[in-house]
Amino acid sequence: MNTRNILLTSLLAGALGLAALTLSPLAIKSASAHECPPDAVSCFVEGRMTGGGRIDTSNIRWPPVPGTIVTHGFELHCNAAELPNGFQVNWNGIADVGSNRFHLETLEDVLCWDDPNISPTPPNAPFDTLSAHGYGRYNGQSGAYLFIKLTDAGEPGRYDEATIVVYDKFGILQLDVTGKLKYGNHQAHKATG
Image 1 (cartoon, rainbow, N blue to C red):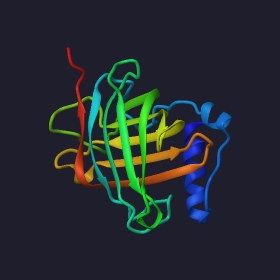
Image 2: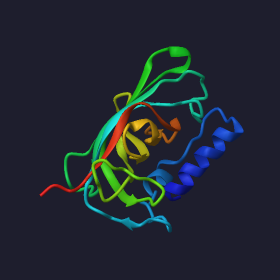
Image 3: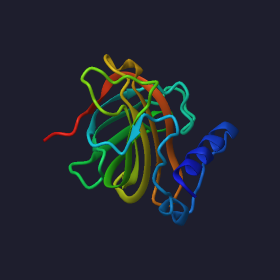
Image 4: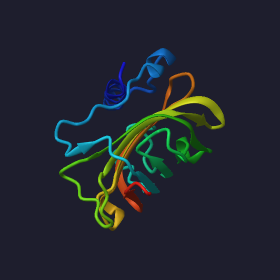
């Protein structure tokens, strides 16, 4: 199962109102990277993206709880081998009971590209969209899976968007959200010398 299938399966589960979506660890581990979108101006560029903020969760797919608050922060390079690569997301639990968190430990794959429909300036950067997947800790337990897609749609950051999908180490869906930033900013950067 590739990353696109994982995301589509997740979207389908949310649309059907399923209580939870479970994937086998084998399906998660076999998720392939990303394909360059056909309309991309360029792909596989060097650079990094930084930022974070609070995501508008009016269309959250999981958990299906009105008022869920999702915040994130990150620094990610377009080359997974280039360090540092960090990503953290926090969200409140069902009925505000407790909170959940994911911390990236290993960035498996990343792709940066220039979407012709998005303008990240200022500052001028060679890309505006980053998608990645990797593994980390969900509520302190290693082995959780993360898929993200982040965009930088210029200043201010209210048009920047984030898709964040988290599965725990057992392959059970814990978070699936796509939304524009309510507060915060994503910033694409050129590669530094």
